View 1 (spheres, rainbow, N blue to C red):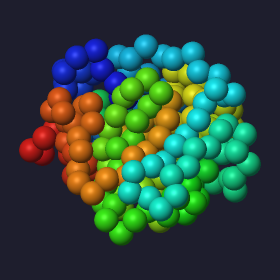
View 2 (cartoon, rainbow, N blue to C red):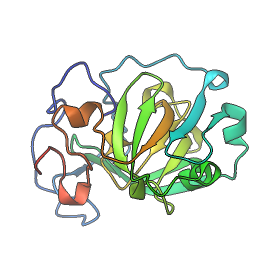
View 3 (tube, rainbow, N blue to C red):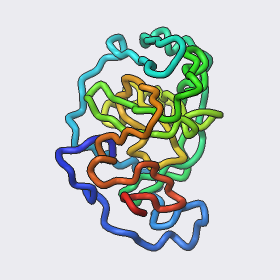
Length: 209
């Protein structure tokens, strides 16, 4: 879930359900979607060509920078293989995303010591907040491909943020940039009732969970 038509934090979520007792890889309240990859976004999917895509990191960094599509694709490749979890209760236990580790981008801009959080924003205007610590040390990527094929627009193509250890609304589709800040600044869903961090294993779905 990456956007919304209004502040309805229960959109697509039917409540806490029992985890699949047959598979301990599932966080509490999740079910295995197997081959399905549900699309949950109330935003209009943008028509964004790869050649028009850019990615910028600014805010509390030593050297703000913007990458074009060709510049980003020329960086050392990275891959994530593992599960993803949506706040609407589905999980996919076997995924493969290819892109570039966010460590590579952050290394180029050099975050300042005062930077503690990040506001991720999409080319659609959608935003979500994350602790900077959740985006470093091999925990996050800018993803271009899924399962060996370019990301479709419905799934965030040409590029999306991928933070697989958090609920998937944190993995902003159509990623445009990151702004590093010194405080937690809630994004769209966080302002409308969702948890500020979103750890699936702690069932951090709503504010107060």
